Image 1 (cartoon, rainbow, N blue to C red):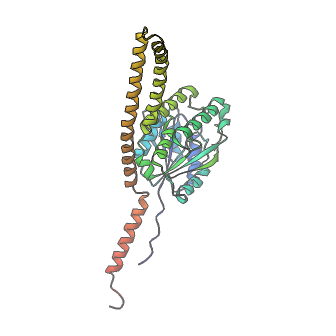
Image 2 (cartoon, helix red, strand yellow; image 1 turned 135 degrees about the vertical axis):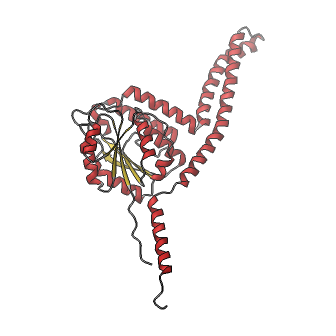
Image 3 (tube, rainbow, N blue to C red; image 1 turned 180 degrees about the horizontal axis):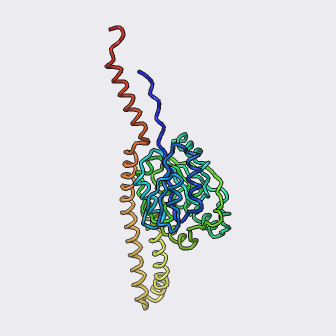
Length: 336
């Protein structure tokens, strides 16, 4: 049987863009040089400038996504594009396309499902101290709530396997999409890796689309929702503990007065404390029930994830080898 050459995995470069006409052509061109065999997709998110035109002129496949927000764009990209390795970056030029081969090599050699290019120098981005403080706070909060798998959950420079992309249930609409990706990987305990890469500044004429306070509030809300969905016992347990503390705060003076006088003169306060106590018990019960539901959902997500082949090239290689083996079996031997 003749040896069959292993097919190279197909690579898709995904670039969500909104008003990046000053940088997108250069970014597409550099990715074409760094990954000559890759298909480069630019998803234009209602840009009011010439982003789409310049991306198409640079050789990218341009698709328009009308729903505003990076999360909506990523959800559309993951659904539309078929490949075996997906590389996601931004179109603003802050991530170096020349680092793409290193990210892909790490994905393959580490047999990971996601590799994150953590950002060196992110605190220097346009001199915005609010972004730097937010990065530190949210990354620290992530480690306490979801684990220590990641040191930079907001990096937009990532490489994925097809298995990750097609099993990721993206629900976020905005910049919180990277947080959702990280929690998905942490919840299912997927193999992940990180590489520290230089993070560049935006060129003149290019401005950040990230709002420190508005998007920070959305990310904080996403943290709460993801904690509720993935760790309901912890989420509702904290709420139950808080309500119980308030209940005891109202209840204690009434009990002390009852022990001293045998009377309960502050009946409304007593009723309120009992109501809060019952609410605390209800929250704890809710957490217990939803914890079982969450475990079942995690198991189903894991099973679906495992049902997706790691790379399609493996199937092509197996088919090619089987066909070659069949041809060899049908070929008459020289002895005959």
